[in-house]
Amino acid sequence: MLFGGFELLLILFVLSIGLACMAFWIWMLVDCATKEPSAGNEKVIWILVIIFTHWIGALIYFLVRRPERKKLLGV
Image 1 (tube, helix red, strand yellow):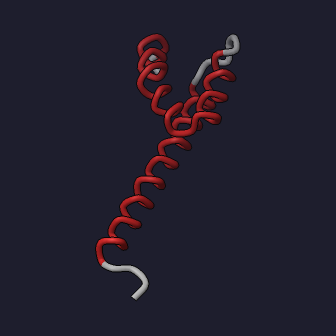
Image 2 (tube, rainbow, N blue to C red; image 1 turned 90 degrees about the vertical axis):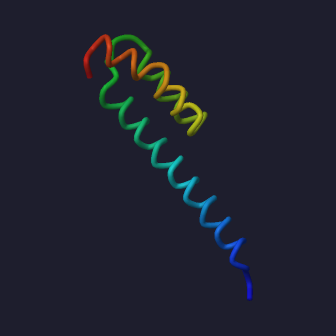
């Protein structure tokens, strides 16, 4: 047998966490690209932050910028 029960569960758990992080990253990237105002360089900077820092940048955008944008613009 290649994998035992625990190893298989661990692999599936890590895989599901990875897929969830990737889905969250794509969601925040699309949200920033479509709903962030185009005035100035903030949109480009946030897109670059999200792209280069992957899920950590997406989490920073989600916690810092997104609530601020929703409060200011309602979008």
